[in-house]
Image (cartoon, rainbow, N blue to C red; front, side, top):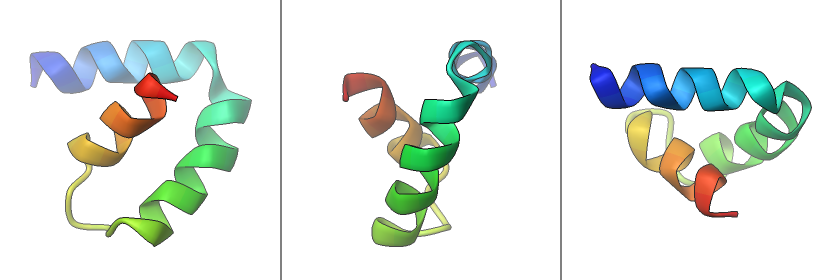
Length: 44
């Protein structure tokens, strides 16, 4: 939960990037693992 909160705060800072990259990552990786795609977005 704490990790999800931290990721949410970071994603809010970059909503445009998270939405554009997130949509592709979610479709590319899988809709089940929500934390893994976010970690990939942060690394990018």
